[in-house]
Length: 364
Image 1 (cartoon, rainbow, N blue to C red):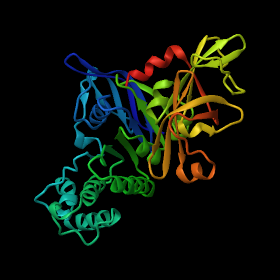
Image 2 (image 1 turned 135 degrees about the vertical axis):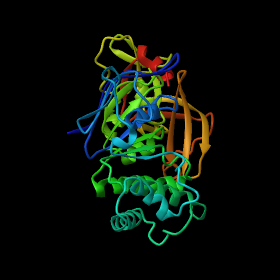
Image 3 (image 1 turned 180 degrees about the vertical axis):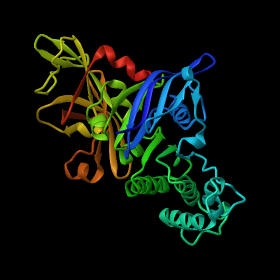
């Protein structure tokens, strides 16, 4: 069952068209991520769902209730939508204690003191802040302040949580810790989470499903994390989901030749379409590097020692690709190359794109 249905939504600010005829559905109980580059309209869409912004056209349903429809004159206020919202900047009240911040929505709702104390205590414990009820935000770490914001959004028992890049201001270790905590909370409470982020790692780690948006506010692909990472719909999605290699391949007779040279691609499953020019897409981890044997002959143009990893930029007949190896494996297998050395390249996996669509990558 869908908890959110977005139908034909449009939103513009003056001449800037952010969304046009956007349609999306989010299922009850799932963690759904809106993923895309900065400025693509992710936060605008979240604010439209929350009721902080009004639609120009289209409809939004939450739990089968029509909450926004400009043609019908419907635009329910945020407090009527049974939502919890957590922003990037925490937005906790600096003059209120942890208890006061978390209790604030219940006070506005007129909850009795006994129920308020019980629910606030339970929620503070749920987010791991037990014993810190009397502290002010200035006495808390960034991660603790973010937990306060989460608790304040959860205490009213919303059917839907909207999280707008809530981990951006945390350091790398805290971000990693908090993303797993948010996913665990979502599972434990069985609520629906809509998470907005430009961070691919966070999206892959927490999502049941996700939508990848491009710089024009269009949804390019919706699906599970594995499907989107391994089966991208187009070059844009493939490129956005991590470090991507695109090697040009041209058809010549029955062969597929790499770059501007005459080397045949060592791959038993060439593309099945009739396009004359193709692009082979693959991740750095899909490259099999060797000093000899079968494969494409290349030259190492850049060799970078990154501690645990060796990173190589390799030229094959004018086409460049990037690969990396764990340093200890490179040492053990004699694959510590210097710049200018020759190498042999094979592949574990290739994804084929029509070369005419490669221009989509630039539209980020």
